[in-house]
Image (cartoon, rainbow over all chains, first blue to last red):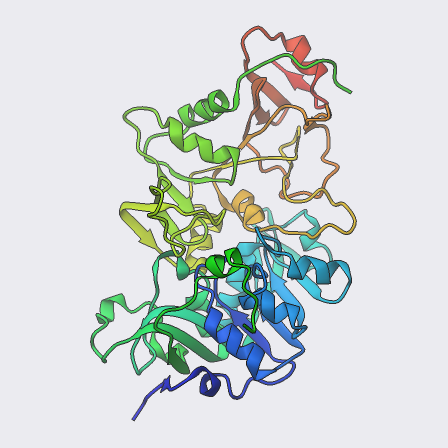
Length: 237
Length: 216
């Protein structure tokens, strides 16, 4: 029997190892799997490379993971956001690496990673500092820059609904990077607010087919990052 | 470099000028900040569909106080609403819309625009500053028409409409039209053509506050 539902976050994250590359869904707080990130802090893996659009806010979620010096390198498009202080401080001290990637290139590198495409040519960033040193080619008189796919050992993703096959549905703009990250990671680990029976999600409305998902853990009332930040909360509590 | 600046259009008037130039039925992406004001001036009888690159087509206005949903936000991470007929999608699809030339118009702010249409709007290149680019480079590379809305000069009096950008570029030769508080300028093969001057301003005055060469 296939059952991707695991009982708790510890079981979900048990095999994350030092030096792993981990994709973390979310655009700001929308779609950020905050309970899985907190469990990763407890789990203890370090020297991580994190692929995520931002670097978190306050001292909870992704920002807390960075504050605990677990992250060696960030691959992201926008490392500073409102209430984002942890990453900027470490970056200025030279204690964390940054690979800055245009947002659409980041998305496509992840998509390509999941689709078995090792690299692709894009018009984005041509003629800018972010294309320096990269191979370029001309197609139909337009210059494109080559970008490599990104693959990950793990993805931590937040969804709204999941079934035991791992089929997923997301919530509004919290979908963002979740579906492509599930495809690009060897082990995609999902926190879902609801676990539903097989067949409860209309097959026409499945957003992430279960084949891309390894484990699902139920988190009924996920914390809201901005609320925790407003309350000056810090993880571990 | 600039003498005392004469008064031109205010920000709302600039946003209204932009809105008037967007055709009915356009798919539009508005940058964060001043570009967002364009949405308040949609001319009567026209319908625009707003795209926000974090995964929503059919973005509606800001919700009423107390109705904000932290999982329904725009690219500036502010709470928004979704209109009837809206749809959500993941990031690779969102940038397929952008890079694949499906979005008609993008309105962006600028640090500098050069006379050949080069745009710098993501970094001043200051040493030690934390670089952050977001979706700006994808938008200028992929959207069919790029409008820039910006003050004509900086708060400290430096030209923003320049011969060559000194800041790191967002894209090369990507801007189609510039809306400032003093004028509307088209980027052409011959340089910047003045389409409209704010009331009471002369062409000579505009040239005196513009580093780039302009013509009428």
